[in-house]
Image (cartoon, rainbow, N blue to C red; front, side, top):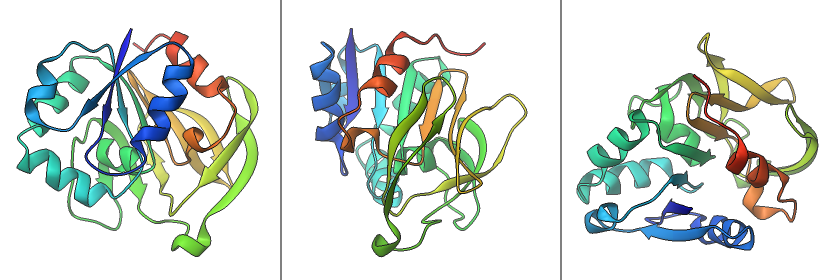
Length: 189
């Protein structure tokens, strides 16, 4: 099994290390030609969603990746990745892939100083470590979206069909259970 990790900007190396430790081969997506390689999974990392969206378009990678998501490739999106998937962004007019029926609030916990760590319930696994860095949250979720975690009363993890979106950064903790669960879990119909 091979995971493609969007490597234009943000925390992609940390995802690669976690997946590699579980025996998953990783491919970095840096330019359009990288999309010609075969891969089974897609990781959209944290970082700056505006920059990632702009680079995806400038490098002519956007349409191909959007089509792969719509065709059902399994996606793990963290922080900025959640924003890339959202079909509505409360405090931003720009949309990106818009493949997940959720309304996301960007930088919902404030600036870098508003970053925090907690351990909270992730529906399939129980309590897991969660690191939030200038994190968004899901303000509203469509009827077919499964809510997997709430933190401080806000939706911080959800899945829709083949897409898992997290406000937090599992790649920054030693706990691999979320990755293990994601790898074995079948997409929702």
